[in-house]
Image (cartoon, rainbow, N blue to C red; front, top):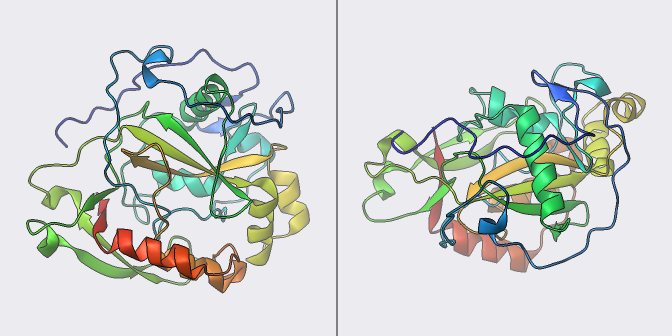
Amino acid sequence: MPGRSTHLLFRAKPLSSLACHLGFAGRATSRPRHAHAHIPRPDRRALPGVSGVQSIHQLKGQGHPPRFAKTMSTSAKRTREDYCVGPYFFLDPFAERQWDDADKYKGGRITATKAEFTEQVNALYEKGGKELVGGYAPFCKHVFVPAFVDLPVQAVAITEDNKTLVKSAYIRRTEKEIPVLARWIEAADLKEGVPNAKYLDIILYSREQIVAERVAQGDSQEAVEAELPELPWGIISIKAQDENSEIPMQPITMMRNALGKAEGGSGVPLDREKYQASVDYWDKHVTIQG
């Protein structure tokens, strides 16, 4: 795609407690601090190695799209040593679709290695004062960071020019989930191309929630507890967007969450006001695939 490259825009100094290579990770060597001070978000231009960065626009995002925001680990059996970890967050297998699963995940591919990506997110979180932004439930948090990898925005406004390009189908993100209706536009069909995002929304689930969802879908609690890194938060999704704030979760994702953990949801009841806000946004926007 025009304007996209495959290199990291910068490299942070390796974190001493991050051990991950060739897509696999070692155990974190230190327990993370749990205080998350809410401080003003740093200017992107002030971050090390990121110079001349322009200010943000308002645009798209995916707001927990149907193929995002769940954290069921569906990979083959693994051990704690197989995870990419930092001092604060680990990379959950559910997020690895954005590297590995071209069949089920149709969004932009992350070209940095899993180890590099996990390292950068942990470093930027620390650089930004360890600010966690509340999500749709207590177990969900967000970290907004400048886009340090080239990823296209994940949604665009529906216009007269592109509305005929919208496609739909019933999809599932894992074999344990029920298929739900989704709609999208193929990136290749957009004559103007898809611009790269200015921000990444790093979606976190608490370790406890990740355990609960996996157990609800049939995994052994003892096995999951032994497998997951001893860190309070796991990265379960990465959204590329132009806003440094959360975009509404898609309506169908809210419905699936309300169905409960056994169906791939989180078990959070439907909030009618938030649901209407989601409808208002997604009635005018569509996700991008490819």
